[in-house]
Image (cartoon, rainbow, N blue to C red; front, side, top):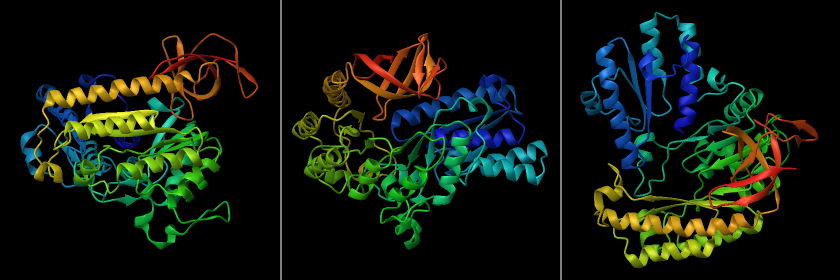
Length: 450
């Protein structure tokens, strides 16, 4: 979400006549876009803010903007008192205060400021900022802002506000614009992306595709159908899903639509039912196991990722072991594991004692990571000698870098005449490469082109 917000804000600032600076000390405007989903991210934001104070003292005309979840959807006056060297505070996905500040500072007309505001806000298509034009291969497209689910550990509802879906026409227009600018892959974003459209009312709940007679009871499935028709777009992903909202119609859309990748991100968070109940997740470990079985039945070969929180309040060794055993049983393609940290305003921070010692949280985190390295190493080893489709995103040193449809990272050597859709090519950025895997590790693979 922050990457998407930053990209849009950069586009708006360019419409005001600004251009990107390579170093903070050379900039006239510095914007810090923040995340507070974990304490470590919040601490990093505070460290950056303090590092900017000397720059402001040396150059009072420097404009400093603070954006994102540290600000939240309701500005906290204490934040302004604590950081008086910040000129502008912006809620997540709300760049208007900075545009208005700069409009007054630069003496710009209303038309120029309104254009900048439109390009910086979540309201349709926009030109990519100059530094990404003709280079950006994969882009994020927010479709659901905020969240109303309120898991007991999650700060998002308090910082990004209630769930709000963007109109489908606006999303399709943005995707068409990105494709026209050379973007080959989009990822639809939502805290619970499967809930896209349900807050927009009956009209979209019975979503009728503009390009077919098929009616959808699941708005996200209908949106995927529309996006699948966009010329120039090669791949579509969506995240993050919730076990309670991922239904058969959505999975069948993934299986049916050729541009939608066989890649599902559906967090379980824990493998013990008591812990899940304290998290307010609304399902059991068996429910989750049955969902994974269904995904694999409807979408054979799908890459499945999950999230895990270790050291949640009250999590015993036996309850952690249940999570470990669930992951060992399911053998998923990716596990994002985090140590629990209490977040302000959340139910768990207000009602539960953070009673798992830090060293035990770290031990559990490492145990999950070690297990997952073993599992993914075995999964990726099955691809040795196989040819996979890779969308190439960029070049790192002497290798091209890209991802498979199931979101596995692949590198291949440069300097070999290769074929893309029947043509010999050497510049692989944004191209689909058929790569035969000759080395496989748990976190990436290396191959050669046919």
